[in-house]
Image (cartoon, rainbow, N blue to C red; front, side, top):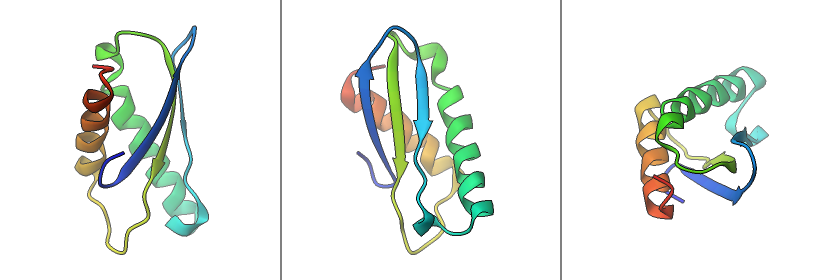
Length: 85
């Protein structure tokens, strides 16, 4: 995990990602926007992933708005921390 993101993963035959955004993040518009931001952040790391995994990303709930770049930075941190990249 990192400051704004938690990742759960397992090895598999193909590369898949899921994004679990709960109702604590706000209305459906805010949740869907957050999922789009997370998907775009994940797409930027696809060329660097060495093996196939199933990933689940869970954003943490915070009082303040988290900038979009923070999710990409934290996703890279979590990948490096787990030895995936």
